Image 1: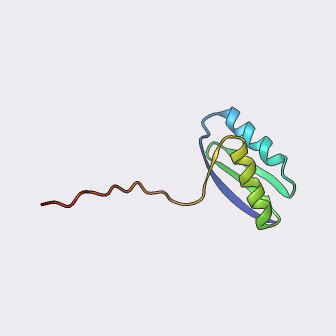
Image 2 (image 1 turned 135 degrees about the vertical axis):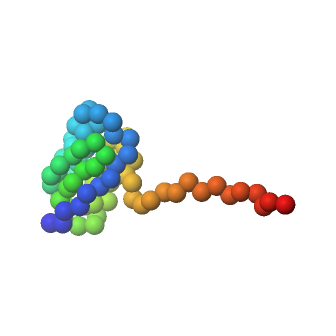
Length: 79
């Protein structure tokens, strides 16, 4: 079983932690190790299980952060 930490946005309180923990507990093949505001550390037995865990978190109303998002603004050319 591989251990991974999932970064989650939209969590702000203990209720959020409980909701994410409950969502992950319902996914076969996921061993919940720790859930805190902003992250969940889980053991997964396959990439498909990790995808199912991600889907469960999103179904609970939170966003899984999978990469770095940059705010890019295109400026008009200067004369």
